[in-house]
Structures are given as C-alpha cells and as structure tokens.
Length: 312
Image 1 (tube, rainbow, N blue to C red):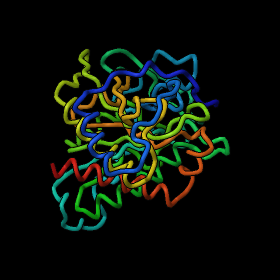
Image 2 (tube, rainbow, N blue to C red; image 1 turned 180 degrees about the horizontal axis):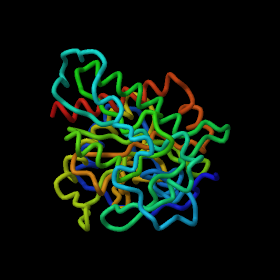
Image 3 (cartoon, rainbow, N blue to C red; image 1 turned 135 degrees about the horizontal axis):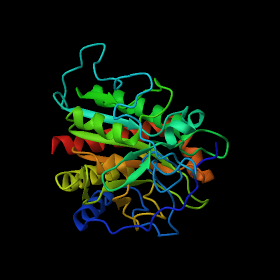
Image 4 (cartoon, one colour; image 1 turned 90 degrees about the vertical axis):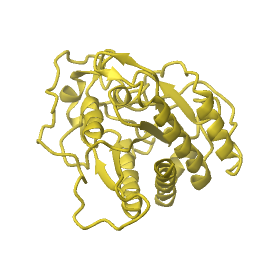
C-alpha cells in the first residue's frame, strides 16, 4: 500500500532545560547544532513519513479494536531472555527496551493495522507501514538493523535488552502494545527507532519527547522530565558520533521535538523517546541511512546517550 505522506502537526515548544542540555553537548560536537528551521516534516508513532509512526496507514481505518494482547502469533517481546549470560558492566541490572519502528510486513496486513486502539487521549491506528528511500529501502528494515546494532552495544555493557518485536510476527505490534511492553518490563529507558519521510532538503535527526498528557489511560506526568533528560543525552551523543546535524525542519535547531499525539509515548509509564535518525526521502540523508557504517555510528550514538542517562 502507499506510504503515509500526511502533513505533520505544528512544531511545539520544547522545555528550556532540554534545549540547554543539548546546546551544552553540541559545544563539543560538529557544526550545525543551530541549523536553520524550514517547513515542518514528518514523524510518527507507527507511521512514516506522517505526523508519527502511528499515522494513518489508510484513509479509511476500521473502528474495531484489536484485543489488548493483539499479537497474531502470540509472540512474546523479543530478546527478553539472553541466550548467554550477559557480561558484567556499567549497565548491569538495567533494562532497556528497544522499539524498532513499524514491521516489514505491515503493508501486507492493512486491515489489521488500520484497526484503531485507545491511546488515552483518543484513538489511532494500530500501526502503519512506515516510509522508505526513493530506491525502496524500507524504514522497517532500517529500524530493525539499527535496533540489532543498538542491542549488541547495550548488552556488551551488561544491560538486559528487550525488543518489542524482531521481525517475528506478521504485523505490529500495535502502538498500545509497544508501550505496554516497556511498562511491563519496568524498563529504565525505552527508545523507539525511526526514520522520517519528509521533503527533499529537509535533513537531520530529531528526538521526540513526550508532552505532559493526561486523559483516559494516558498520564505522562511522572516521565516528562526523565524522558526529556534521556532525549537530550541521546541527541547530544548522536551529533557527536554520527556527525549529523539536528533537523533543519523540526525542533528549531535543537534536535528535540515535544509531542502529545503519539500513543507510544502517551501510554508509557517509563522514560521513553522516539529517535528519527534522518529523512529517508532526502538523497543526502538517504545515502547515510543506507550505509552500514553510518548505521553503526547511529546505534553507537544512541547507546552512548542511553548509557550516559542511566549512569546519571
């Protein structure tokens, strides 16, 4: 099915503390931390290049709701129990949940992913297809590759790592289930890995932070500040490690964007952020995203940011 090309919401103001923290980190990073601001692009909870990876995968979504445990295969979160003992390291005793955005086979299950789920403040589609480069490299493949690299780096430091999925189910998981996996794991940090799908010329990465949201089953009051700290640390290390500048079209040059419309953030009870690693529709960013060496740097930047946050 076609990718979601819907227009993202208006950019939101972000906490001064977060912007200040990122600015400090950027002092030792590459030039470009104050990149110019251009027309807004896209990002999503379960969708790309839309307002979030949750963005609509089809204009006509079903009103029916999948069961809370809506795993078509009954699959459990991936990577919850390592096959070999983890090494002792600085992250021993810590749990990190990695959420690879989308699922490579979502486009084969449009009926299922169009079913709406409760995100506390409203209802949104279970999941979406994600975006791709113009040459056809799918975001869902990118996110799995980077997530595997990130898992290996974190496990080497002793962390227990759980993946919300590992290409081991026909579609999904739904955005509410993705949040629930992190909550039930009592994760010390959750990172949802994505890539954006915006206009040519829109370049750079950004980290999406949860807004203060309360309604229905959503209440982010206890995680707003900790998530902002996590996001700022990741953004600073991402700049330093990858050489990529913060987004020139979202976040006002800070690389940070605060949103209250993403179910994966709204329903989280543990610190969580989304990382949009770049714009797959821009040729220059696409060249980075399709390069295995750069993807390793992206994973390293995220791992270093997570570790810095967990170490305090």
